[in-house]
Length: 251
Ligand code: IPE
Ligand code: IPE
Ligand code: MG
Image (cartoon, rainbow, N blue to C red; front, top):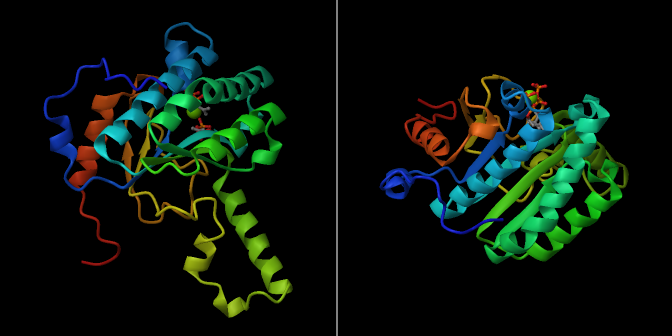
């Protein structure tokens, strides 16, 4: 990953402007790569390639600004329904990115984790994922969660099954099951729920992302396509978040 000082124009005092009431955990539905490519008369995969560059910049912003957790939606359980060539390309892209960026991410103390049913992914990709998780496991600058073959409903089903198994084995009483315990059976058990969710490309839906965890998350939608998203757009989302009144049901 390119962690050289960013070559994009920095908004003056951007860091001090947004340092107040920073979200600790930002989740992103990175949408619009296909439309970005189509607008340019390019194949959809060109949009995904560009989108990967954007992830690097946004992760960099998070480490620069002090955001502790970044969770990105890279591939949903529903995305298997896309043309095989596109799915294959995405799997290769993920694998290549892990190979080329791991060293730099490790140097920057990024702790990388994958959320989703990883067993269904190509074995060579699984190997790179396991390696990346093992190498960066002790890093603490930022937790970078990548949701791959992730579905929010499947995640909840999986938690239910695991809980039932514990009950059947006599390790758990049904009345001990509460919200906190369910949270411990989700992929995100180690991190607090997202403070801010960003979805690009003008679509206003969750598409099965973090259904449990987003219960009280502030949501920011932008028409900007993911492949066009950048540091300035990201800072706008953060500033918008900072102006929100988070009530959690109170007055
Ligand atoms: C998001 O961009 C990336 C993935 C789902 C992998 P899309 O590929 O969904 O782009 P659009 O929505 O078709 O423009
Ligand atoms: C959501 O985007 C999934 C990812 C960004 C990985 P999609 O493009 O797959 O979502 P829908 O189909 O528009 O809801
Ligand atoms: Mg899409």
